[in-house]
Length: 531
RNA sequence: GGCGGCAUAGCCAAGUGGUAAGGCAGAGGUCUGCAAAACCUCGAUUCCCCGGUUCGAAUCCGGGUGCCGCCUCCA
Image (cartoon, rainbow, N blue to C red):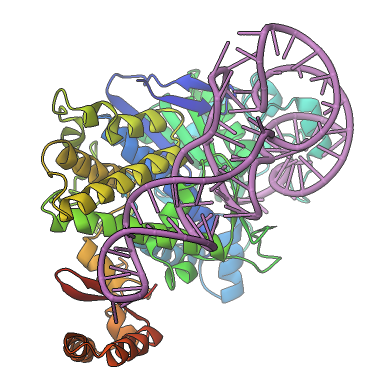
């Protein structure tokens, strides 16, 4: 079984062969920090989170770089509007971004570089392009001469003539050719500037990614990802800059995720239908958002609807319930997600220190040999999961296998409960595979007990350590008094014993009206907060 | 105008040559005092339409219709 990845460059699935055996260098374009992140960002970042986790699961040592663009027109505009500095805006929204990422349970990248910390590298890259005549200075600006780079348009499948039709020159720009793009922008009054050989100014957007990817991953590396909208011009320009400067092939596999539409409309500021991660997390469990995203293939567009998100929440309940039952049966006792920090050169990032540790399965755990000879192993979850993920990270199919396994496990547990089956061997193996697999997808970051306790309440914490914290237990948030519930359950139990079904049912109905569901099990009555 | 994508059951969705995964909703059943949860059974003779290639197509080719994205900042 080999991993195949759809490469935007060739528009085909290709067998994944990293430059260096056992190692993967991966760069993903992160946010421009000028506003809160929304569901679209969440989708992108979750898609690459799972790709990262899966590569780790396969045993690769992954160096995962995700940048933060902390100097940009939009940041400057916002700062001017708010009467503050660009640096302050960037600092603030970098913090907000990190809170969202931690809340979503994302693994922390190996390095998270930002543009303003890499001015020397950026300037060196521009100088090199100038020396090699791929760039030219015009006033205090420096532009990349697109027509001098032979391969331009290869990634986005455009030719120069087509591009020319859509190109435009902003007032004040001094491009020699409308297709050219800025590597360095001369500072205007009131803008933050850095010194450079061309005078005070700031880097263009594209050049930071070329400089920083090279700094951490080298001139040539394995995977570069981002949203589909970045294909042109951002990634096209990155290729031009990087390959012109180094003379080496830039990236082997380009991966781009599809967009999220909101209730059949494109999410956009002008339509006023931005759904922020923060807003979602006030009512949806972070792993339900993850499940919602992973239920669709990463390259396809998603149309968000509240109904579908609610469905994801239901499915998450089911998976956690299955895990809980396995735990109670003494199977799958393993903690869902053994914390295992990402391999590779950590700690070089500019930001991101002190955040929650990534929750990754250990490669050893998942590569442990399966017991021989059992039928369950042959058709087991883990091989099918890998088969699905190996086909261009087909998380939707992988989830289908996960649900299949859950149903089989629940069935086995039912039979066991009736004294039917025995819980040894294959069942234990499948149970383990179930929890492991969910972990690779970034699910099961809490224990079932914790999950059901907090179920339905995910109040965003604006203060504190940056992780998701609930505003209290679900009971408190809904004005439910646990002790009182227990008392009512005892009262109902007494009623049931004297076969006073009327009283018993009335108590149950009253509690249900307050959002509490009772379940009578052989071991007694348990209660849960309704979703 | 140019480039690209998508169209699969009531809804969501996987599947790119070998006879339609999975989930939600719905119906019936097992269990239960009744429920809930879990489990079992049931749903597309068919994959937007029309041609074609093939022993065989949801999957390939041609044409058509519809929807969407990018081409300007955008995940």
